[in-house]
View (cartoon, rainbow, N blue to C red):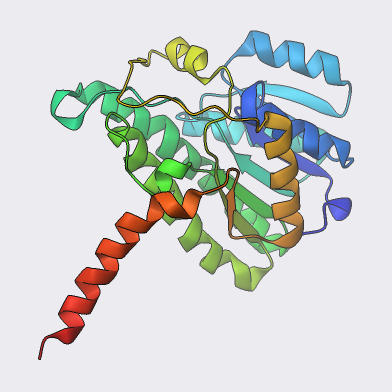
Length: 262
């Protein structure tokens, strides 16, 4: 989709972090932007700083009725949404499955997977009817390979986002609507702080977070390019394929074994 032809982007989790990087990338290209975020104070500050082309709406992405209200409010001001970015999410809880509080598991899936599906439920049909638009769903490198202990519930949600996005892309392509799945690696943001604000937990998990010079602004530019080029998958860091190889090799070996049997 040519962003020069788009008028309105709707970005969840857009008051900080990767979401704000994406908001600013859309605004630099002349789009009006609705930022949906659960943090009302951060939302008001960001919208105030960015002027009339950016406005905020408070939204908990788990709230389906709230989604509909947010859509109606946003489109009453800026018109139909051309670009939907389902970005809101929370961090891993650092617990292994055997030690996990089921409530924590439910919260991670409700925000990181169902919250994204709710955005699709709210906007996709209208985009399909208009025959234009683009949807970006934020997954993670953890949605491509589940390799770090203590990130299991997060990976379950993010694998779900990847599958949702791949299926949605096939469904929407014949109607002129693009779909991309964003699979970022570690970027320094306030994700941990936001996780605590919604009742989540942050625990140290095995392994050290890698250092990265990738910024939210960088990710915003990557997302803008992905929309323009209708890219199916967006990775933000190098060497992602290497982390996926053991999993994919095991799948290939299982398939080869079955294929070799009479």
